[in-house]
Length: 131
Image 1 (spheres, rainbow, N blue to C red):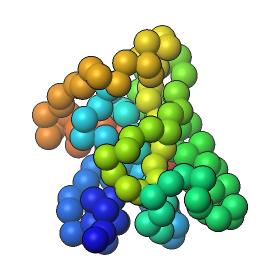
Image 2: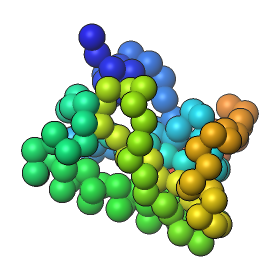
Image 3: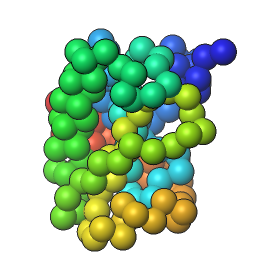
Image 4: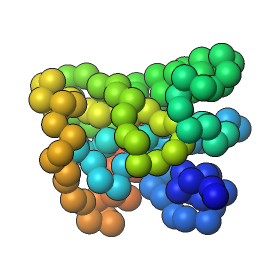
């Protein structure tokens, strides 16, 4: 059964797409811990990040760097934190979280809610900076 991320990649489920290329996809997290919290995923469905072949793994990291720099230009923050976690979706992914302090990255139990309009604004702002 395809993961929710594969369904997003295939266009079966809508998402707030920030960036995309032939191999990777970046979308806003729908349960963000900070404004601009973005997920970066390979289009290839592999459950565990470290099961990716070396080329895909390196490409994912370089794509995540591009997206993180876009986030940093679009969302006021001191740094963009990187975290790999989440057992609920069997599809490798990286969390990019705009941070003012380490607490922003370490407290994944707090979830923020944004309106559709706010999500669209955040998406557009980051996407513009990822070009």
